[in-house]
Image (cartoon, rainbow, N blue to C red; front, side, top):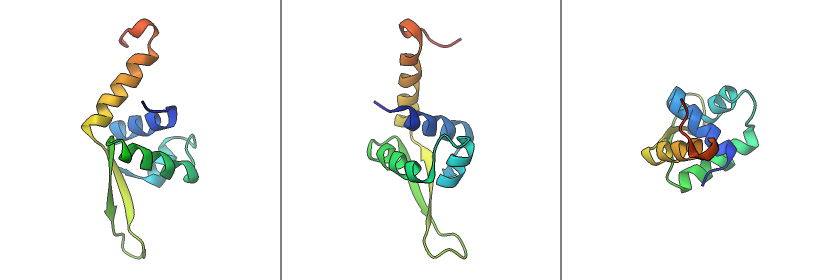
Length: 92
């Protein structure tokens, strides 16, 4: 089971491909903030729905993490979307 913000992250990763946390925040049109993005990405990683890869960026001391959706994340997104439809109907 995923919450609405986790669903949003999965939707964005599916639509736009791998992204850094700040890119996810930007694409979410501020529905996600700097504090919540790491809470939700950590939860999604623990559930095996996304993968975070550490990438060293030139000029930064600490590596950044780029997130991508895993097959289980795609399935969770389909499940969440089908549950959002009345009477379990599939979207047109």
